[in-house]
Length: 245
Image 1 (tube, rainbow, N blue to C red):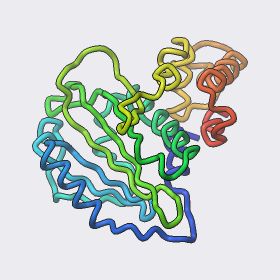
Image 2 (cartoon, helix red, strand yellow):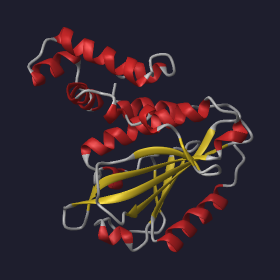
Image 3 (cartoon, rainbow, N blue to C red):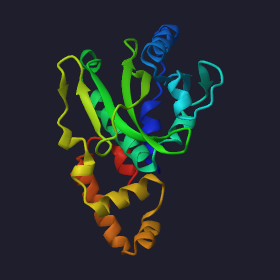
């Protein structure tokens, strides 16, 4: 099963007790972000499995269709934006967001609002060339049922193009970064493990990965186990484990 499907299962977790947060309030906040920061703001409603996309002038630079503002889609995944992200960065984005979800789930409700994701990803622009884009993501939990209700994603064209994509989780209240080495798996997985991880995220089975990399299926299985152990996800999330088996 693909990593995104596992993440969807987590984000769309159902409950009989509905969240009473007023979505119109959060729509207005998303609109404000897009207008004041020149950002593309995506508000995803986990309860309704819908998203609302607010586009500023930055959307033109990235070659995104204008359409209505907001554009409403029947999914928590903004496919028009996702398909512009570099494939390697897209996979890293999904994995990082799953780890962010699990980090917050382990916290008390009152602690969660302090944390957000900040990352730098490559996206194709209107000329079909990759540009650096700053991505920020915030989770809003329901006080009614304790479940994740909204995710707000902000996309800004970055000021610089230095180094490789950077995925971090920060505490905005304390101005602290969650220990980077524990989150940036690029620094703790071998090149071969990263190759295996990429194919796993694309939905390939172990036998297919073995053929693509010209290695034995036992070697693929060993790499998968190493990935789980190095990322320390074997016990923290069964869903992430399932995506590798």
